[in-house]
Length: 238
Image (cartoon, rainbow, N blue to C red; front, side):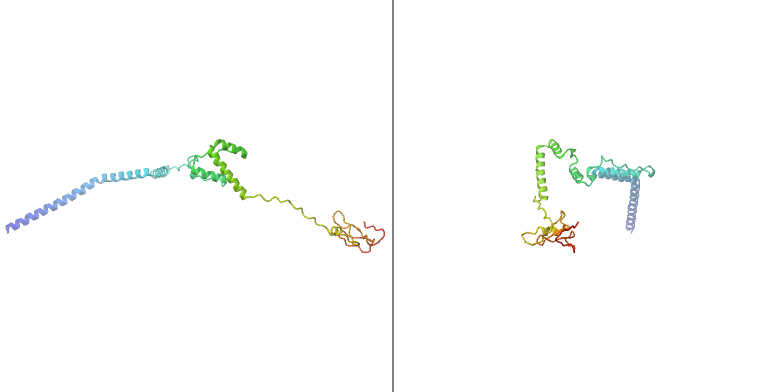
């Protein structure tokens, strides 16, 4: 019985020592973590700054400048903030600028500059032949041959698009005759047929005579006979 009691006491003592050691270890761990919390915060901030710098290196220059401007705007008081200046025209890339107008020349020039911003365009202010001579001096032989080939194709296209109309001789319109002229110019020989006399305008003369009967009479311009004027003697219709 003494041995069993002694064994129980020894076990309790050992268990008490283990519990005490466990509590002491936890306390030491908590104290160490508390002491190192400041260092952990510094390491966290340093890691975040390094990640931000690495991300900025991967971004384009424009994105970097934008990010720096945003950071400075956040760290600067509201009263001290200054609005960013608008980019100058010389610093703006050609791709970000639109054509100056809707003219075909400006549209094509804009497209060519987008493909090659260093492309040059000479000033052509002479006549068509003069401008072509100037272009030939500034081009290589291969470029000029290519340009001539393009002009030939363009000319063929214009000729096919607008064909020349057939040059037909204009047929003069048949002159319209008045009633008096038609009766006076009636074709064929018809004895005893009345043929009126017309003035320069094609109207009937005031005095008309029938050669077959010998009668004369007065009439209006339209050929209507004036009643009571027919006679074989002298007649004045003026």
